[in-house]
Length: 340
Image (cartoon, rainbow, N blue to C red; front, side, top):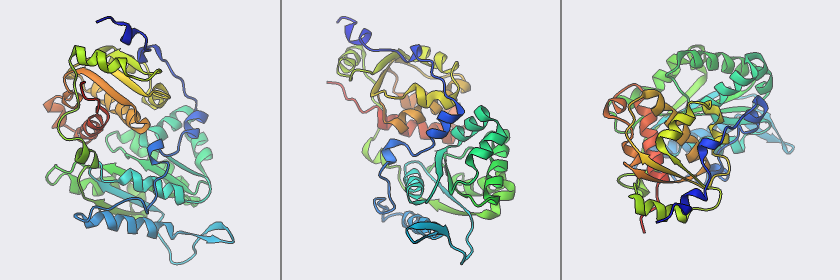
């Protein structure tokens, strides 16, 4: 078979996006798959009552604002904590609920991942980032990270300043549903790490099954060479094809905050020669990259080993377990192209 189906497509390694602080701020909105997320179209699993309880908690949190003459103002009574934190496993709807809250909140508001907020601070500087975000009605933080003490302390300071000026905070973080004992401590870990802010957060645990695995069982789809070429031939114009190792090397040249621009406009990507990772830094970059692919709902076709097997066993048993399990779940959902 000729190489024409592959060569007609572009390559991610030829993209070198830049992203200014202003552009980062402009993109602090929910991912497009949550454009229409509401509390009403979140369907709680009846087997897990905590999901319905989380919806109720979001309604209560929204009672902090009420319509007055077509506009919104803060309730004066009863007093309410300015923060809410959703702790739970992968795919139980935390991001959906966070986006639904963001859509309902009045005024100027921001929605982003932890890494996007830290990138904003890095691009603008701390004081300019505070000035930009000050006065927002809501700061929504998806996938709050606790593994970098410096970034966590910086975000704690930032959120503390914003809360003092009336901004409300909503955050989520992942805990693996199959980690015995481990998941139950995520909320206390979060509150401990944010120190002075902890007394200002309501925390809620959401149990349940990963909805992605409800629909995509087993492994991420891995194609042989012939199947891969056939799949690539069907990819929409504007898709890309890259060697897995070459892509990993290219990701080292781009700050993770710019991955959103790297995948902007892509309908699908092809990856050849997928293999197990041996370097933790490569694995963490891949996690950040997969998060942006998932937000943009970019289909993946791949050859080599299944993408859910790229993280070595010692990685899955280490300190970044939560990140890797989340990425595995998302890669299974994105690699849905079956061989012809």
